[in-house]
Every structure is written in C-alpha cells, then in structure tokens.
Image 1 (spheres, each protein chain N blue to C red):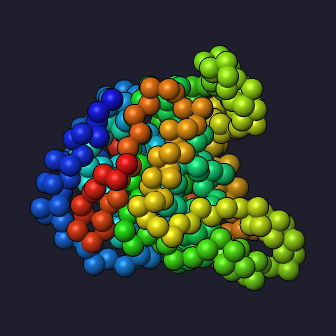
Image 2 (tube, each protein chain N blue to C red; image 1 turned 180 degrees about the horizontal axis):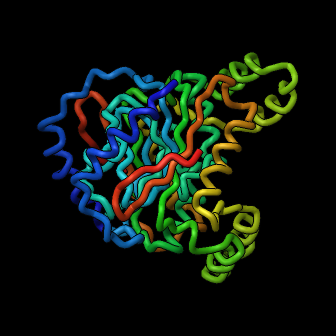
Length: 171
Length: 171
C-alpha cells in the first residue's frame, strides 16, 4: 500500500496557501468534538469550524469511553469547556458485535501469537452499538455523569447523516 | 459554552454544496491516518485527502497505543492496510508529565469523588513525550511489532509543522 507516497506532493499545494501559522495551542472556541474515524466525515467543514477553534477526537464510532485520556488533557491543560459528541448514519459500528470481531481476530492469528492475541481481544470491548440515536444519548450521559470531567462542561449529542451531510441534535 | 449553537447554521451551508452522499463505508485508499486532536490540524486538507479515502483517528498526541481498538476495526472489518502516524510541532504533549497531570486532576476533585478519581488517574498513562521525532518512531515501532495488526500493514511516521503546514516523513 502506498497512499503515503502522495502526501508530499499534495502537502506542497496545501503549504502554498497556508496562512494559519501563528495560532495558539488552546482551541479558541473552548470546544472539543468527538466523532467517528469514518472516511466520509470532515469534522471541520461539516460544522463550519476553522483551524484553531476546536479539538477533534476521532475513533471507531466516536465513542467517548475511548476518549477520556484526551478529554482530560483537553480540559485541564488546554482550556476546553464544551464537548459535542457526533455519531453518524451508516456507521460500521452498527454492523458487528464484539464477540464476532473477537472470533475474526483470533481465527486469523499466527499460531505463535494466538495465546497473546486471544488474551487481549477477549478483554477488549469494541464499543459497537445497535441503536444510533441511543448510542449518542448513552455517550452524553456517560460524560455528564463522569466525575473526571470539569463540572461546568457543556455536553451535546448529534447525528451526522453521511448521505446528505446534515447534522441533527439529539441530546 | 455555546459553540454548538452555530452548528446548525454552519452545517446548512455545508449541506447546500454537499455531493458525496453515495460513498461506500470502506476507505478507498485503504489508509488509516492517526494524528493529534490539536485544533490546528486539518488532516484531510493538509494531506490532500478527499471524503471517503481514509479513516482518521485523532487523540491527544496522535498516540497509537490509544488507537488499537479503532485500528483493529478499521483493518478487520473495513479493509485498511496502511497506517500513517502523524505527531506535530508545538504539541501540548511536550509540555507536561503524567505525574503532574495526575496531581492537577486530584487537586481539583470534589471531596465525594476524590477516591474514585485518584484511583482512575493514578492508573492512567497520559502518553506525553519529550522528543517529538522519537515519539513518532516509537509509535511506528509499536505498530510494526504488534501482533494484533495484519502482517502486511504498511506503517509510516510523519511530523506536521503547525507553523508552516509542512509534513516531513521520519519513519
């Protein structure tokens, strides 16, 4: 695989018009967005955010349970006070279960690593979901009830539709 | 905090020109990019990536140790075979240590949550680093030596310069 071989040439074009070299580290909107790693999501463009305005945490599903380390650093060291959680239509997280994925990984394991791999994946919750809107509400509740977050944190929950680009607030 | 109150109006403009509603779930470049949550990084634009081409995982520092769940899902269920790891200049992860951050969180804890909070943060490695280039090399090595990844995975390591927008391959 060689997608990285295009990075230098593509980046050269980006650099030619780059004008944001003096932005401070703390996000100016004091905002952190959590969203999915899905290739069809451009968090900045779809929300009208500019460089320097918001932290963006992305992982499989946009699950907040997997973002706590980042959220603590964002709030305590870099001043964010608002979290917006986005999950999206057509998400891969709606298509499998943790037990299924554990079996896939274990089945493919090289014999010399089979025991180690089984031990790790059997302890991994892959954080899939079956109800999109409920998963957003669950994540918002998880954050609101988490004593590791600062008390004055504003938390909202959203669905992004990959088919028309629209966002909708659900929590 | 009310940054989210602008999402609907900003998104309306995005939707008006949105034309990518029929992209499939698997990233067309079979690429996963890991980068920092930093507000000054636009992963798509800086690498010339288009919607649908690459998974983007973002967390504090762009640390791969914190991305394994997402990488497994990306590889096993959605077909990616290449990982590009980006850390960046001026990263907040160069400015603190895990023991310092643990103290900050514990000092601010409400008395009724103090024990719970101490227990969690004392077990959390915040994954900061002191040498930017070495941190990229460490993460690339971590992935190359990880038996949970598919054997044929291409892994590269990069530094993004927030002051001029340039990327540089270091591993």
